[in-house]
Image 1 (cartoon, rainbow, N blue to C red):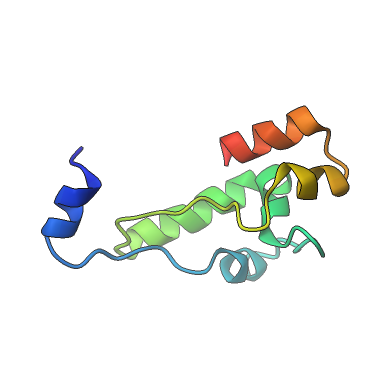
Image 2: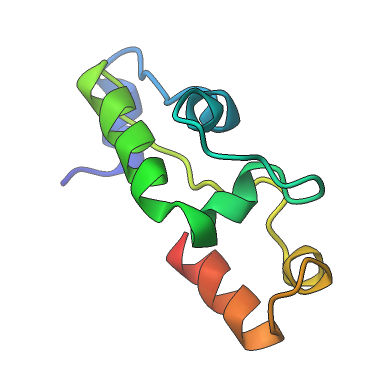
Amino acid sequence: MGSFTDLLAAGPVVLDGAMATELEARSVPMHESLWSAAAIDSAPEAIGAVHAAYLDAGARVIETNTYQASVLGLTDAGARPAQARGLIRDA
């Protein structure tokens, strides 16, 4: 696999799109404070499906689903600190 610089040098690069919108379209509930980050734990298969759909549509760069994901935010929502760190790592 080439470097990101090589990817940019090859021409326009298409990134993925909205994660929360696509998760909602798949009936994944959004957590009030965590928003789509709750799906890291509750619906990882849906996140994978969204990533796959963006790749199928031509995206060449996929972002992690970590918007609103932090150890503080996840622990405030009920996760243990070690679990929160693991969720962020696995995202």
